[in-house]
Image (cartoon, rainbow, N blue to C red; front, top):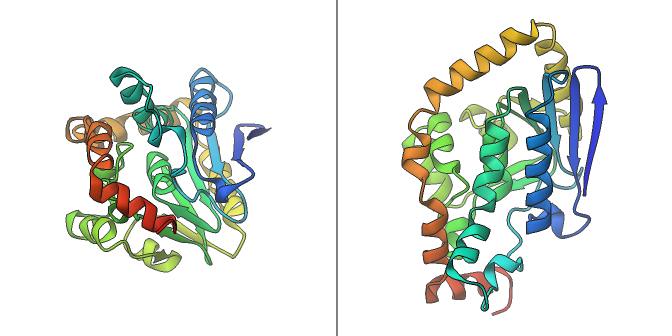
Amino acid sequence: MIRIERQEKTAVVTFDRGERLNAFNQHLIQGLTQAAQEFARDQTIQAIVLTGTPQAFSAGMDLDDEMWHMPEATDLERRETFYSGVRLCEAWERLPQITIAAIDGMAVGAGVALGLACDWRVIAGDAFLYVPEAKVGINLQWGALPRLISLVGPARAKRICLLCEKLPAEQALDWGLVDEVASEGGAVAAALELAVEVNKQPDVAIRMIKEAVNATSNALHRATSFADADQSQLSGDFLAARSAREKFLGKK
């Protein structure tokens, strides 16, 4: 599901689950987490482009994933599963390299969350962002809410999460949610251009500046989102949330 291509100091990480518009399941989450852990020890690569398929960066969390159906699991096993996405985003956010999410098609829910864990986001002109978590009775988790607030402010963060409006590329750029709008189908090419430019700087400078900026801007992120997966597990088990998921999936 994951392909890694290296071009001098740049790596392109492409994830393609092959079904469900690249929705995340536990196998994909673990694979992307492992990829980040391996890059954390890489002293050659200085910029990483993370992308999905031309049809979708990701349609979000697969609502048929095992995390929603664990009747035999212990409480600790359920909690471990619900925190897998949190650990994925933390692994990508902590990388010493500059990370650029290249978004074609759509980024939905968890796809937005992973994009927010990257340093920059490039979106194709015909793509959109969408956070529908409230429609299925859960909160935006994976540590994404404080990252979202840092980029767009509290009022717009509430609107994105509560009204569940699809954000076209230009609006996402205007609101500060993405950093660049590329041509249709051109997100990866535009992200690679950014990678080439950043790689012109000394390797040590790239890493020191990223670490310094993140240490300042992310100082309280963990403190304000440390229990978001617990909240999601709790609220996701409410009767209203179960009913909302079935309606969202067209089962009612």
